[in-house]
Amino acid sequence: MKRIVIGTLPIIFFASTMQSQNVLEARVGMRGDSSYHGPSLLTATLASAIIPGAGQTLLGSRRAIIYSAAEVVGLVAYASQQRKGDRERDRYLELARGVARSRFSPDGPVGNWDYHERMEKFAASGAFDVVPGGPLEPEPDETTYNGSVWLLARQTYWRDPKDPPATSSAEYEAAISFYKNRAVSDDMRWSWLGTGDGLQQYQRAIARSNSAFKRAEQTLGLVIANHFLSAIDAFVSVKMRARNEPDGRVTLIATLPFGISH
Image (tube, one colour):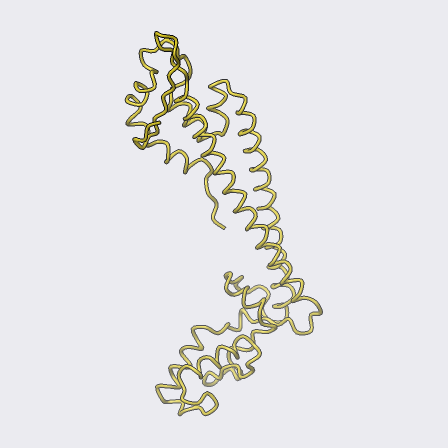
């Protein structure tokens, strides 16, 4: 599973304000305005983008507690979900190696996700070559994974999948090539037959692993959103600082970095 460095996206997003800092600060009255003594617009925004609540802390806002707490809770939940996903993944890999492949090649290649998905759907892989030592003879049992691949190859390249053409024909060679590229080799052969509820345990472990990783991904999205919200909050808080006018009126200025003014 791909991991995302938290804070990278907000930093990239808000770093675009750097070139226009002088213009923004001038418009908000931060330069030459003795009424404002807080952090600069860029400092407060980037601080919150990197560490939620940091900008609010610099501004003396109690909302810092909310953003900081959300960050901690989110990261703890994300780490817990990732650990559960890893634990369940290790579980189904162990079941694949120690149960389904124990009679064949338990120490063979681990296989990618597609391989383990096939193990979830087929009770057995079937043999790659039914009679080793001679010309390749694909698995004929269509209930196995390799047998289903050979059936698809025949349906794709032969006029009649039950009537084989000559072994020297282009149709036969095309079907054999299709089979070789997709069938499971003998060093990755498996069978759940005779293992009791081994397949059911395997399927449950995969389901729990996928669910945990999905929740972790969703939680990470919320953590990143918290960075954005905290940064926007800090940005708006600085921009909305009141500036007293000579006649006693209070003028609030808010200018977004996209040229939109309110």
